[in-house]
Image (cartoon, rainbow, N blue to C red; front, side):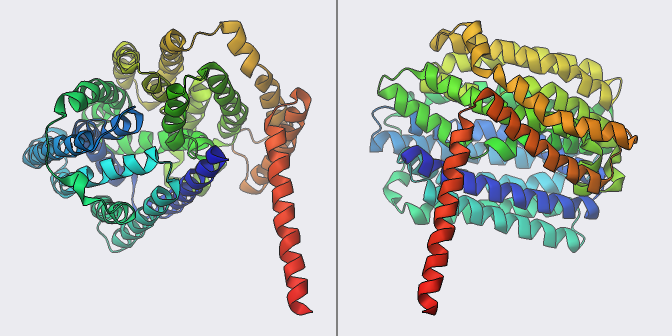
Length: 491
């Protein structure tokens, strides 16, 4: 029940966040063009590494630590604050040079504004981590939602007023201010903000390794945008970022609620000495039975999805979305491998996963960039499977399992994927327009796909069927109780 309650709160937050993101994407994609979006992507990619250094993995340290004391919490805050101050000053000072390097003058102002939001991070990270450690996901959900809504409203309003890419910078600052205020409101323990370095060795020993791992991951994720900005132009950066965002959409929609509780859950099980293999297989089973069909459908219907969400001037992203969707069929939800390794006390192995895979990924994508964006997308048919193999290699060191066991855990989901897409494929064949499926027909195909997916679940007797039945029964009970109460009020 504790896990289901946590899932309810985190899923509610993430799904509402996804809806907000989709709404703002629909609006802003029609207010801003690829070149303007490219400026924000360049700025965000440059700041992503700075953000990893600034945070020093305080969240993971405070959630995972077995014997957490007030001195360790204070030390975590103090170190994070000092690093944040230095990073903010460096970003502010280097903004002009970065803008000159990419020959994008507006990038300087963008970086200046966002640099201020870094100073608020130290007041959010430890408080939020302690709320998560105590499984108080209701508080973190409300704070996260409120700050996201504020950021979305500010971004849309400023873009409407003609602030162009700067609307993202100011919305980022507004969101950071509101998140800091609300997080402290829900856990008003100001004693943790008292400067102390008494346990700095413990914080740095964990944080340095985990941060190095995170920096490598961010480099693999964001460095390609910086390369595109130099080798191609800001418009190419904007196009590829939007295509990447859409290819991540199934994973975000399906697993956003799981991500925030994965590390606390696995850490709690590890502290109790429980066998994590069963939990890992269960996660992978639920992940693939949802992710594989969703990505297959996105590859089929990328054209209508781009048309609805981004608009006609973004249609160049369609082939890129299709290629990335196929490549991500063998990807894992963001953070799952990192959570497994950190929860088992193997933070160094988490570093090794990225140390091995990221250089290969960056090298392959950099070579492909000389041949255009579609070539970069095709290169991910190599880099994503490579990352999967490396990840599972290190996970097996802490949670031993056989490859046949893994295949048995997720193999049935291949059948579910096939039953999901066979109906839409037949409709597309009859329609005869290839991938350029009209939106109404795509909606009809989605309904057919849901029926095929449920049929697949029934054929393989997937445990998700039981969860769906319980959810259906619970919804029926709520409706029945509401109707009874309504009748009683009438009488």
